[in-house]
Amino acid sequence: MQEQQQQQQQQQQQQQQQQQQPLNRAKRSLALEYSSLQREPVEGFRVNLMNEDNLFEWDVAIYGPPNTIYQGGYFKARMKFPTDYPYSPPSIRFLTKLLHPNVYANGCLCISILHPPFDDPLSGELASERWNPTQNVRTILLSVISLLNEPNTASPANVDASLMYRRWRDSGGRDNEYERTVRRQVRSTRAEAEREGVVVPMTVEEYCASGAKQPAYEEDEPDTMDFYADDLDDDDDLDIGDDVYEEEEEEEEEEEDDDDDDDSRVSRGKVINRSAPSYSFAPPLSRGKPWGAADNAREPWESRSEARRSQTLPVQARKAVEEKLSEDEDEEELPLSLPSPPPPHPPRRPTLPLPLPPPPF
Image 1 (cartoon, one colour):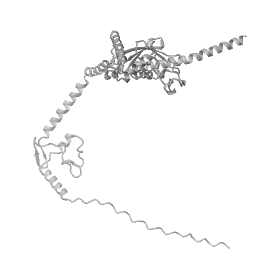
Image 2 (cartoon, one colour):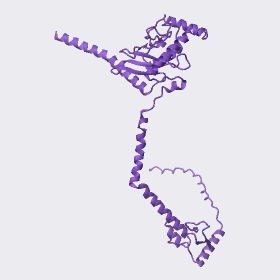
Image 3 (cartoon, one colour):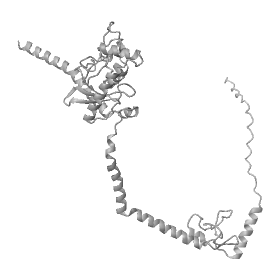
Image 4 (cartoon, one colour):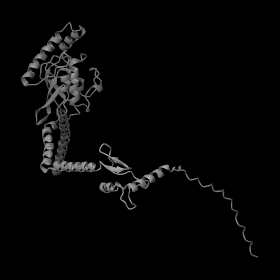
């Protein structure tokens, strides 16, 4: 007896777990979709939870699409999701009074995307037009907005509304009973939106902008700017920038003093005055040594002051240097020639094998 009771308890626990699995899956799917729609809203509708503790009932606000007779409308609806969502479709019921061929008198919406996935030859709907688990709230509500202006009169939910719509469509607008009724309902919904403080989009630009949402990080922009400003203030407190500027000014003053000393000096027998350009280093000789430099003289890239001392020469030394330069200029530079390639090796003669010694007797 005890074993049978234990088996029954185990079976009940397994059944409860099996029932909880689709419920948990539905809650997880609905939570992800709701957070996605709040983070990235879509133009034409808004969704909110009827109760924060219940993810299976949503309040929906649908805006009438522009350039239609539903333009400026504010239609409220309620979506109810089954516990095995997304394997079964939700249901939608309009809370606002709406005249439409695919809306029942009690407000329930009849659309193929919300019909269970089984073949019904009498409905005239294809299996691909019915519900499948790949659909979501976004695709459902976009299909509802498209259905407002393009109703399905082949299988109407409201026969009277379907007949009125056909007369209005076939007459080219002359029989405007359907249009007048819809526009009257739209005006009443607009007044309700004003009471609730809801801005209903009227133009295409406003309708498309209704789906845009400012990113949350824009609220932190002033703090970010203050952060950079604080860094600049810290630099001012440390006087880092002033020290750098003072060092640069001192270097510029030293360079100006050096340029004043270089204004009058002798180079190649000519006096360079202030109007002529000054050179930091004297023209090098063929060996690369500065003017009047000995063999052990420093190279011109070492210090400017030492190179400047070697630039002032007596007259005799200057003449000797000029003669040396003139001789070097008269010399003709020999053209460079590539070395001749080595002669090719003669072909090797084949070597014959040495004869074997005679066998011993």
